Length: 406
Image (cartoon, rainbow, N blue to C red; front, top):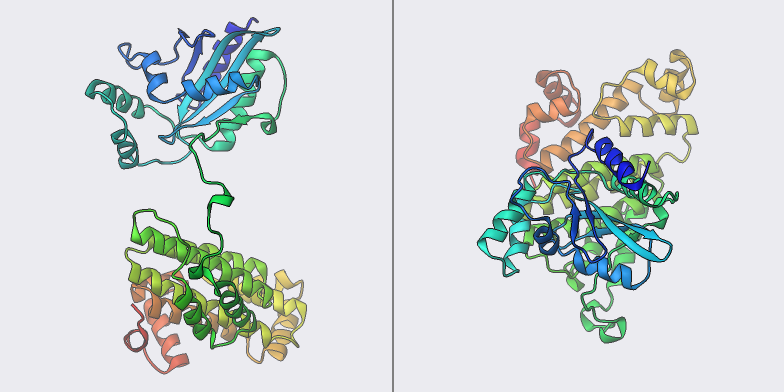
């Protein structure tokens, strides 16, 4: 098979999964073959210019690089470019794309286009292309780049051999930035004080956090969106809490599971107040778990593991046979060993942990009592309410009314 036949075969294979066009250009970047068939009036030469592929390709050639080029352009579109050589002479340029690696919003694309002086007709052409662009995971695009290079050159490479388009925008060097500023002094020490309190399960951690907040209101960056900035700051706090809890004795699997859980809660927040409340909830949760671990110094490894398993799967229905099997014991031996070491039955411990989680959700979210009951697999709202009343002395609604943080 010659190169053209290989490329045709490769193009057909890709289209079994994704509508990803393959274009071929002459060395002077004149279109030779097009893989777009949706609109014959749409000029691929114009498209190439509009999507800013010319400059990255020219820089790649000037640097005398021959491996595939992976371009992530200003609109968030991804292109793969392979170069066909005969000895030292460039014979052709082959591009695969465009594709998205994520769901870029229409508004973001429009915002980028507004920065450019495009005619109405050219804008229409670009948006026609957007209707047909596939969303493909980055790792799969890397594999496509390796395969495209093989079709063009016959040489096998790995994804480590890919080249990426450079950002040519001028950025200040570190010497041009005042790295020591008055507004950042003392933050590291205050942060370490806060982290140490989390590691120790110290209930006075809020005092250390308040001290840190008095020195800084979070990372300094401008995204033009106060809620997005609040969420990003909350995620930084969540990461610090998660790592401090692990250092304080919390099982890493538990800490990472909580991290994922609260990350989603942060992303789901509708306003800054909700974000702040989730931050309070997650800190309290992590500190409580560190305190629990500190109290387990005399607990055997098997029972510790069982408690960790309960923490990770607290939203599921848990059974004693299931936990006994995890610990490698018979149900009878496990139940007695658990009660001797923990001071309560397995069933009571599970119920206590579910109630503890319910308290956090009642105080820190707008979830309904039914939703909380379902989320924690109580089986029914009535059973949840009666269990909650028995342990706390008040109904879920009364607890929420007295402890709501929103």
